Length: 125
Image (cartoon, rainbow, N blue to C red; front, side):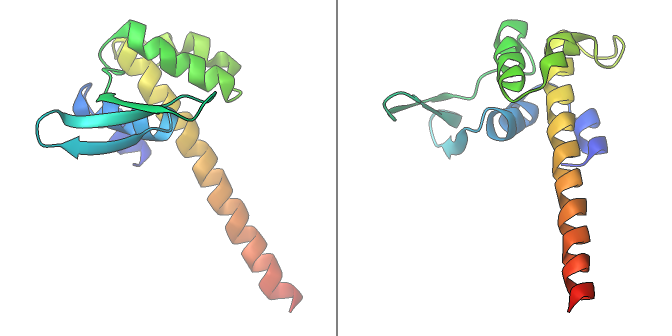
């Protein structure tokens, strides 16, 4: 997703799926009966549970798990992301969009670095 796509996505299924995949690291599948479901893996024993995709972008208590994950990933300022957008978004939506944008920025930086290193390799030949 681009920055513009992230900012324009409304709270709901699409934004929740993006958060589940990209932030929480969960596998998402579409079940005929249950709709989109996510796989939660227990880090201690490797067991897993499938459940409907959580309402990350719609429910502040669920969005708090996104904050926890981002803090775990090193984004200490994630505890302040409810204010992202200056009131334009609900708190849950703001957290989800800020988290996705933070990861997008890392992806773009990595891509630029890889391109620069690739160019560097070509120059040294």
